[in-house]
Length: 312
Image (cartoon, rainbow, N blue to C red; front, side, top):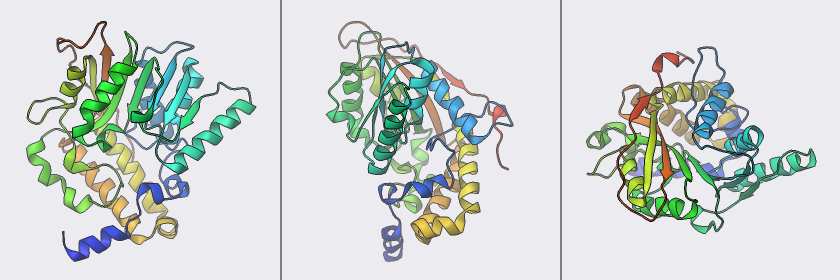
């Protein structure tokens, strides 16, 4: 890395350092910071985010009274939706102090108004010591180093009851041999989107794919769905909104941070459009009994790209 690049990256503020107001400039009202699902050409970004959340929660086989663990809960949109729609108890985990305070305040407000109450913890999944009925992990796995995938899937398998479900939504690289074309070196500023240079394929053995890590822990992959083209539209929406609020964004985060976010949003949109990156929802079901080899039961299904709308 050149001296100039190092200086630029040192001026880019990490996600943990940025105020919530910066993200309000381009996210929808729920502050959902992951791929949306465009089911109708006239959907707003908020409607598309709820469609993605509902798609994920519907796969979890939730029932009233269950406990749902949301690993990497962000600003709480998924856990709050689960509480309101399914009547479950929800616990969110986040390491970000701003997100923790925001979700905590939302939950306190809900308690005051008599709505179902959940919990939020500022901790990692490694420290979690309860046994939920279901686990959802949207947009968190891609930030985990691949060496830690076995620990994460073992944690989920051991934590869940028999018939438990782990729902993963994560960004994957469809061709790891093409990794240099992602421009990862240009996007190595801290924590803007996701670390492109270490993304895994959805399935495979060299390198091992997300599917294989889940199966090694004992899960059966019962459903796989690709949403990659929908991330193209999501990123276009974010970049357009952030550009529209350029002056305010620079006031809040600085010019280098603004440029880094715009650069990665537009660059990643090109990679999803070209099929070199994808987003996959993995439905991982726990079978009865201890760890044992299980048959591959999942097959890929694309969410039709023709449903994708958004800015040109």
